[in-house]
Length: 400
Image 1 (cartoon, helix red, strand yellow):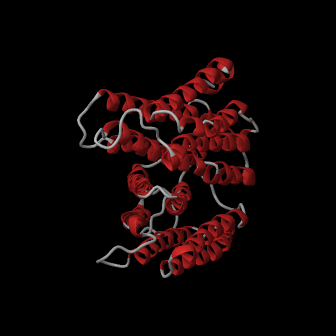
Image 2 (cartoon, rainbow, N blue to C red; image 1 turned 60 degrees about the horizontal axis):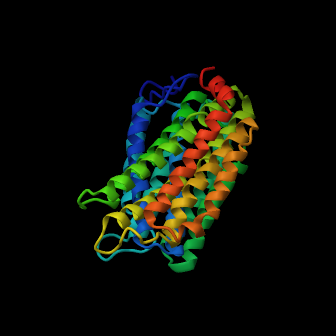
Image 3 (cartoon, rainbow, N blue to C red; image 1 turned 90 degrees about the vertical axis):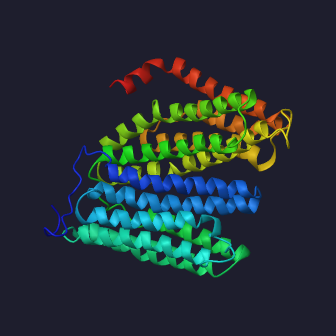
């Protein structure tokens, strides 16, 4: 037990798994991902895609802070439970304000500043709890101080300043806040604590599930209120299949191999895997899934809304790029994460990712439903090739 009886921080033990309160916390992140997809779909321009990407990066960085906290002390015990609920409130308020993160809407509070302050509250709660639990650990407290001096002061300050600006200046300040925070975290050292490799790996696996769930929600949103028909049924099944194939490509072998290497790493090497493989390596996967969500939403809208589109209309521009580029980024993220942790490089996945980008100009001449079919077929072919070609090592990893 850390601290006095009133505080009652309970350390996480080796082998502990994710708590139900952390899963509850993730429901707010589900909503945030949905809002990011809605922001991107509202206006499919390059500028708006950059804005959506910046918001997603900020919400991701918010989430990973609590993935570390929940690995040091149990999220559902003592004062940490209260802190988690306060953080949930701040994160939910930030998610609600995503449509106004850059441009204030008429009436009500000033949206960009509300978003920045809500984000700041969530980060301050995290630092306060971490500072308290590190009271008896001089090394952890020094690490926390090195990190917080740059990450909190620079990152959040720039975000508040950005709320008072507009246009390119605002976006550059956002970018500086996010990149500065990420780079500072990477450079701040490896004296953090990881009490349970199982908990940490499971935490990131669950956030991938959360993001994939959002892609399925996007399918339903794309045809909400439209009468069921064979194009809607076929498009929905293809979209679900694509999400399922991405699940397979991550969880079938890659996640297990990464977790095994992570659990057997020691000291600074384990912290580096936690940072580079999970914190940084998983972010392209999340971006890719959100991109896929945007593409699926647009495809289902095309095939379902006969008053504005026909079944022969092609998907083009940013929605098509998101549909194909999203899974490609997901594959690249897995390749990097697995390579850093295990040293194993998947050439098949790299080739498939490059091929997906190369096929975008071709798919622009196909009906939207056909483009989705090609994507599904290509990912299915990758799964079949890997399952057959690597049957023996796959079985060894899955049933070790």
